[in-house]
Length: 474
Image 1 (cartoon, helix red, strand yellow):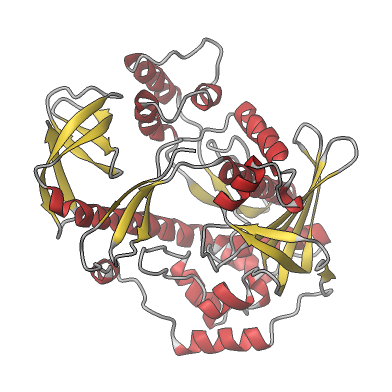
Image 2: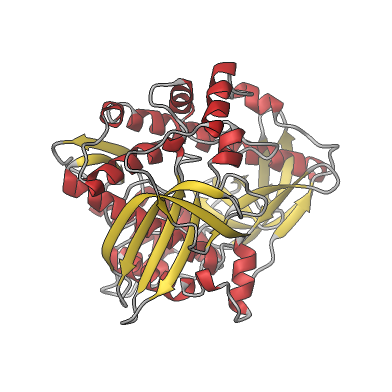
């Protein structure tokens, strides 16, 4: 595994108060919301028909280190015939949120949890999101339990969803699980994850799923009180674990499509011009696109660590434009699929952190039990897509601004310095570049910069107030 690249700030610990004010982010929850959350902890809502006791299933969670808002717990069993049974427990927020109450209204205003380096802006009060609703190890929690049978090829054959009580036995992070698998002694609850994960990844490619394997910039706290920029490669466990969530989301979408009521995550397929343009870009970067290979197969075969591949992945983002949330009741919409996933998909696996999951989950539970979808869910279908789209836009802006802020703090002491960089997108006199160490995305000026190649760049200016860096070709 490639070690993360880290460069530390030399500040005394910059904060993000100005950024929070710029985006008018709430600092806390109102007293009515907090009171309702505290009351729900003491006396949660009971679902019709009660809950199955699934506390005997040895669930584990896999999340980033230190996470407390744990949405999912997993257990994968091998079954006779070479297939699998996936048990996927999802935090049941509806057990704590009275429809139309203060908590519900506040969650609809927020849309999703926003993540900033110096603390989150949570969707729900921490007493729920990091306490009573979170699938913390050793704690009995209300959950929505998905049980999905998968055959030896990785295709689902049966889905069951119901309310249950669960108890996670261990809290892991991605690196710990990866290390245990690499060493040959994985936890029994996820011992089958590599095999199933690979099968699902292969199926995704055959479905036409498009994944852009661009480097991810992360921010972490520095031991000296500042902030660190990290480029952390995605490991196999991260990808395999994501496949379990995608499997569940696709099962949820099928339930809703069959019932003709639901809310899907949709993305139109790229048009022919965009695919043709991608082919020209590959040719310009000297990347061979074998005849007969689909976009998905072609991209999956690229080495994401190569500069030319990075440049092509950066350009491929134009294939995945137009994502949205599509709600329907009684008649299927014209678009029910997500081009990036290669099929129909719905958000149901992160209700602590994302609003739409609570509503989509309630639909799946009702349909699976042969009950009417609750009126409060039906009434929300006309509003939730717009609420989620607005919160997605805000979340993307906050994430980008946070990274930009740390970039200028990190680079402020290096004006005049030279760095190695990869040219991602080039125009006549400027380009988008990825500085390799520290991992910084920025613009660079220069004549005909070579797209998909490494160059040397010089940092010419840092504007802390505007969170802007200026580079030129060295």
